[in-house]
Image (cartoon, rainbow, N blue to C red):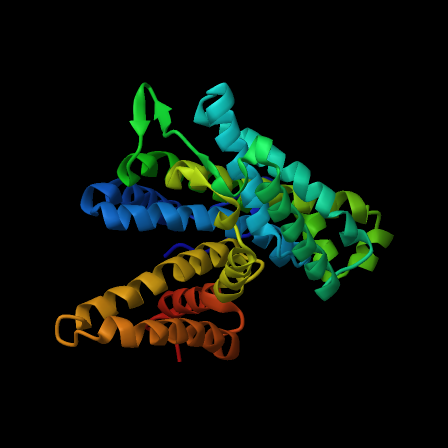
Length: 347
């Protein structure tokens, strides 16, 4: 029987995977992600790509809100900055997608840094209102700067290409979107094993004490805004390649609320929470839609009558999580792991 021992170095203590079992599960997950598009049809490949894009954006918001304690309702607007950056680069310069995506993230990070300046003076509800203002300002720019954004008509985005192959189907785009999502998640997970991530957590837990200990609040708050916006920009760039058209109405305020709800349902302050929450928020409406469609042959009026009910059920699920499991899906997953870890010796 193997007995656990204390870590022998800081490197071991900070390792992303602290056991062979975790490494094997991660390898199995990667294998499942590789095999998934071959077993799924175009519809499920479409949902997988959309869920991966939402996971990236939600993870960025989780860095800002879950780990740094700064509430933002501008994540969708920063996605729009990334999407328009990709659209302009593709149409005007024709640069490849692996150049456009980082530039989209950097453009969104610059915008996020500017709109993050109020975070030094205000927080909580007041900061949320300030970021709503950012959302409206950017939406106004998208809709009225005709010479750049083409106004309300939007911009059509040509498909991304790789080795001369046009990535114009969900199956093909999956091989770009999913690896980018995995890399972004690994980056976020490792971030909180560094002094930067620990500074974020210190600011969230007690910002005045963090400042007394020598953590410059403005620098790290703006860094958190920049990182969250970078994730949003990359997600927006992938969104542009995925849907192939970018308009001001593509990134409304309700989408920012969607991401905030995703990290609340999944569990704020955990990487797993951002993943589970974004996947939940993406897939549950589709599953409910499939259930309504399954009833339609027997009940022809089901689609008309049950569509509002589907929205109510979706909202009720979110409220149920807030009431009965405020720590989100991530805590449910941890509780399940503990139960199986102790089985059959648990009381």
